[in-house]
Each structure stands twice: as structure tokens, then as C-alpha cells.
Length: 193
Image (tube, rainbow, N blue to C red; front, top):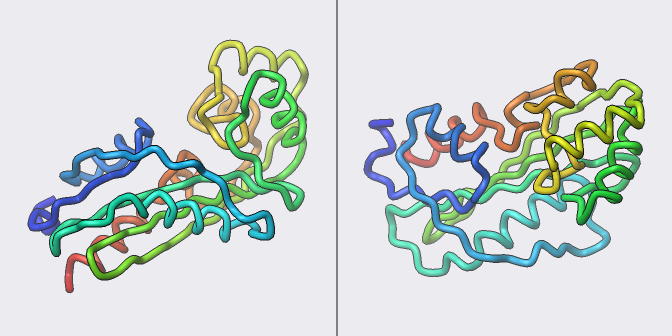
């Protein structure tokens, strides 16, 4: 996008979905990631967790020039006052999907925009309603889609989203991993200064 061309925008994410969203809106960016242990204080809840994690992911970018802008993002699933991250293994993926089955949960994505002298953090919350999933549906999904890199053990853009989700409230792209409209509005605010 021409209006952001005087910024060196760095996306600190290996997520192909986040990368594609930014390409889709015509943003010029490069990818640079640092390995960060995603551990957060136990007392944090919902958006406080993802807000904390995006700041943590931005910490390794210490020496930014005036025209550099780092985007970090984190998505969590919040259900029954509990954070569901990425499943460690198949058993945990099954457990998470059984927990979400027939229930509503929140998907929270936070995004940090880090510059040399300032940082802005936004987050978006969407609600997802799952139908009651059968054991066969859960097994089929995990065996065929291996959702171990996804919070809550599912990707709404995959088979499970087509057959298992009754409705959503809020931003669809947020559930996939990046609230695109909000990100674009924030970039415009930052880059217009």
C-alpha cells in the first residue's frame, strides 16, 4: 500500500494465515521472528493474556529506527474462565475439542505495533458457537488436519469450521488469527502522524 511505503514494516509471525492477510490488503512487509517462550502470569484473564504475549513477542526488537514498525500478534481461545492454547499432543487436542463441543467460546487476538519510541496494543474478541461434535468428527478432524499449531485445537477456515460451527459473532479474520480491519485502521492512524 502506497501510504505505508515510507515505513519498514516487520511482521514477527510465522503464521501463514497472518502473512496472507497482510498480503491480501496489499501491505509491503518483511518477516522476522524471534523465539519467545510464551509464558504468562497465572492471574491474567482473556485479553490480558494475549495483550501480555504480544508485548513479550516484541521485546527482542530492541533497536528500531524511526521508520521501522514491528507487528506482533497472538490468538487465544477463552472458555469457562480458562485459556486454551495450542495442544501439546493428540490427546490434548481431543480434550480441547470435547470441551468446546456444544458450547460458545471467545477467540481473542491481540496485536502490538511497536516502534522506536512507542507501542500500541489492540485486541479484538469474537464469539464462536460450536454444535455438539461427535467423537468420530473430532477424530476425523485431528487425524486429517493436525491442528497442533492452533489455539483451541482448531482452525475455523478448515473442515471443522464448515461442519462444526453454528454461528459466530464478531470478526471472522480475528478468529483465523488477525483482526484485519482493526489492524488496517491502526496502521493508518500510526502512519498518518
